[in-house]
Amino acid sequence: MTKIDIDEKIYDLYDEYCHGYLSRRDFLSRASAITVAGISGLAMAQALLPRYAEAQTISFTDDRIKANYVEYPSPGGTSGEMRGYLVRPTGEGPFSSVIVIHENRGLNPYIEDVARRFAAEGFLALAPDGLFPVGGYPGNDDDGRALQRSLNQMQLKTDMLNSALFLKSHKLSSGKLGSVGFCWGGGTTNYLAVEMGVNLAAAVPFYGAAPKSEDVAKIEAPLLIQSAEEDPRINAMWPDFEAALKSNQKSFVRYLYPGTRHGFHNNSTPRYNEAAAQLAWERTVKFFREKLA
Image (cartoon, rainbow, N blue to C red; front, side, top):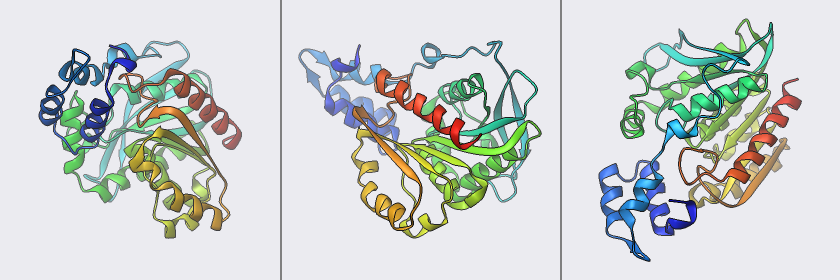
């Protein structure tokens, strides 16, 4: 089933489900009550669920990269310890580094693939798993979403901050650090920009929640803000965020991708928009190469 086969009402229900406002059962139940042009809403809803095996773009065995899981201290976090997926380019280094922050469901295969993509482009990439202190990503997004929602959110953000500091000081890192995040990770990238000040050299939030206007003054990193056109919850935050960035004379550029939805970069579901995702990726890589050089 392609993107154009799925009705708008199903996309709206899926957005509520993705952000934890609907359970999987309620999502599928409400979708099943809808039929459009003879197509069951349940079939449309099931087509939107992620298919990670089909979405892999960089193999684990790609000869341009080396990947492994690493553990490191995280004082003040959920448990005091963290784990992340560290992917390095082949070669001696040091490398510019990028922390890749997951959505609201833990370190799933899509985010691991994004980390491998960055390493294939020459960056040292770390994708932390915020669920590690409670057993790690459980293998499916529904349980992952429930686990992440159950955590103390400030401790979880502290785990991401400690992950960024770990990567910045890694022996293979040049010391120049960028952050990219998607959905919850986009908002957390904005959080890191506020908290890290000059210690973060560049930030790329994909459809992430804006920080508080009064905190924008603390941002030192240039921002590349990637937004979906059809994303009312996140886009409603933009006017205040933009005003705060301008009044504090911050360096930023925002791209709004026509015809896209929240999650358009995630190639494991039909929300994926190939043209927009490719353009956003090219802009992200170019931005990091300029700012982390």
